Length: 489
Ligand code: NAD
Image (tube, rainbow, N blue to C red):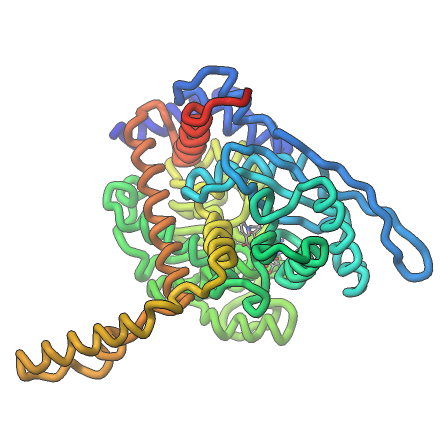
């Protein structure tokens, strides 16, 4: 492997022109694509086809609000059909735009390819601020948007399968599934038209924590490789490592909880919308969660000192920084104050291109969003499979596995004349349930993908960082898919 120094020099060289601050997400994603595509041998026309967004459906639809009517704008972008169905969340935000939806759809194509989830990339959005609407209004918007998608075949278990994103959750996914079902009364696989549903409506256990858990599995794998951690002056294993997290929502909270409980890592700061909690001895994650639930923020939390800026956590003294809130958080104004040696991008696009180039050039290891936050789509894939099989994972074999383990243990104890301790017995005799299988599949996915990215990084000496390696891996896989199946007609 080239030395860290030579890699860093090439990183700065390959981005020699100072990039502009705050590029649009689409420009950013395409710039990262172009940089990675240089390292992959494919016909230029095919590279262009992989990059462009195939279809965008723009909808304006009316909804009855109060005593009147209001128009809403919505989109569903289909980036790539090299695999079917297409997959990607639905975002409700006043800032959503066609360009943003196209960028996020492209990211989904690359993300799915990297973690070997056999879907093309898609994304949807409706221009609405959920907090301004009543629940019944949101339901009407969601059902009407779904009806529009159905009418143009932009949704269906074998066509395009949405999921939650910013501003949407289980509740909206249940409305989408129900609307689709009303339009397709004979469809036996209707529940597979959307993922991220409540468990009682065909969802899967482990989905809520999946993105945060995937972040931990990705980090764990990096910290298993001596060479990777030595590159940044750290030792193997996450135990005792100082972690700073921005965002204590779905992704940040679960990542913090699992890192503390399962890896014995030290959560030294947590940034939220109203401030940052610092505690060099480690923050009690469960206590902070309970406090924030009760008070709506972190101000006044007694288990640490609390500053009044949610961005302070980005500059905290720590080994690993996990931005898990918003995009463009590490930028020109604060990039020189980042002290972490590893940045684990749980959020989408938390670093501007300039900050990314600066920190990579300084030798900081950045585990890119396009890989690291793919836990959600991975478990969505498991949910889609569950819906198509109409069977909860583990239902057939759990009791059989337990019976076999019981017989094996009894025979072993009889042979050696000793009893296995109760705590070990409990672990050995427990058959895998749905959540165990989901977590196991997620762990396998994140480990395999990390090693595929690492392999391309090590093989292609001109590739300067893991982000370029991850994009190159995605382009290689999508390109191979086109080469294998040909292009119609
Ligand atoms: P979330 O809304 O549950 O959590 C975000 C948290 O960030 C909230 O607790 C919010 O209060 C906090 N926050 C808001 N402004 C802040 C600020 N200025 N400083 C610090 N904290 C602030 O969202 P989420 O689902 O956890 O998503 C977080 C990021 O992860 C987003 O970029 C999202 O696109 C990305 N992501 C999420 C998933 C998923 O499955 N949820 C999957 C892939 C990527």
